[in-house]
Length: 281
Ligand code: PAF
Image 1: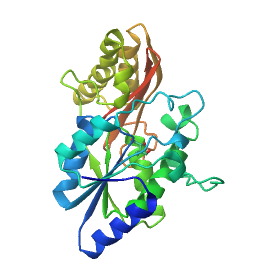
Image 2: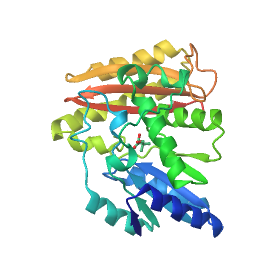
Image 3: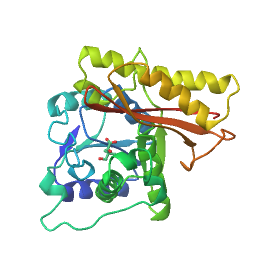
Image 4: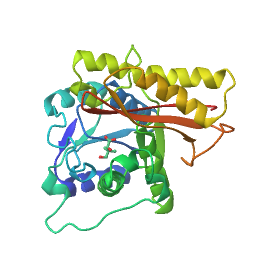
């Protein structure tokens, strides 16, 4: 695997790959890789013959007081995982390489960035959309894979690609869970054993919502209440939101009469966790 730290070099490599007729598959990450990330790379490999992964903890998508400084980092461990996965190129720039002095351009996606995580992390999706646009212009992929765990992010990126006519296919990678059901996330590393146990309540509560849906309940408000009540039955979980939204557009819906996502965010032991489940698909 070749490690590239400079924007110019990555662009030149991508130009060469394209000239050689390679299909470039791209997985952008912030590192501290787990099985969820690796599954995205395997997905890219299904249809691409040159795989690029980026690792960049993007400062512009973290708000004041969020975990940018302490976000887990492990370049050596990540490199070993990527080598084992057969990734061809790792793009791992420094902050100064990505954001030159005087940087002042941003990409803002409208409605789909609002509500849900957008309400609790102002500016987050602007930071994500901006850095992903930059990464797309640097890596020049034919296809990019984004995980379903960050469901709103996935739809923000899809909308952006459509609106800006970016010639990149966006592929969804399914949400990968640990054996006990907790959604895989680099942030799980922050959880103490006691809080990790509490964190399990996120997926368990979503399963209660799904069971209620499967038993015939269609009212979004009732499904939300089922999930929220279950989460709040455990001390030490502070719910930010539980919402049922249209799975394609993220619009608010009153009844699940089409595929819908039940999405939630909660703080457990000071750690912000998100999870979701799709119903009616
Ligand atoms: O999902 C992530 O890890 C990040 O938001 C991304 C897409 C790499 C942009 O920084």
